[in-house]
Figure 1 (cartoon, rainbow, N blue to C red):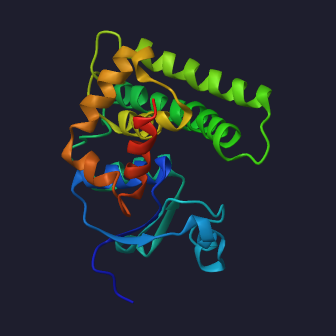
Figure 2 (figure 1 turned 135 degrees about the vertical axis):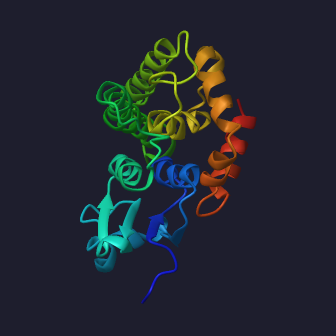
Length: 225
């Protein structure tokens, strides 16, 4: 079936899903939206496994390139920038500047995301409480926030003092810190950075994709701090 727009985004309202939707919104790229119900394991169904063999969201299909599929949120961000951001607004072309952005993108993918994800699991979702795991992953999440605090010393954004996919990737996870009871007052520069990114219209649109349920849950968690 012919698609209205070149890209179809398969996603849910999670930090990784937001990374893709915020990037698309920031670049003003029209896209077809397919909401994936991860509570029903739609992402594990055979049709979706053909798009992403890992069975996770988000994923995109680029219909302008013979239905080329891309999975892994960071890879999606890089792909979209390389193919649709001719002005290099979110990913610089100059090699050293680009490297700085990719370093903080990898920092999120290899550090903040996995550690905070495990902290969420053991502190919020696990059927039994394991104090060692709860403390370990929460402490490591805070340590990584401390690294962001250092990186933001003297600059408004993580890489090259210019808003980029490095900021989007880390923001989408740090934005969810209230779930863990983390008060960003502990990290004043990070708090200001989150507020700075919050003020962007494209970000507010992106974190409401596919709907605003995730934002509402965040507001409830924030009110408990």
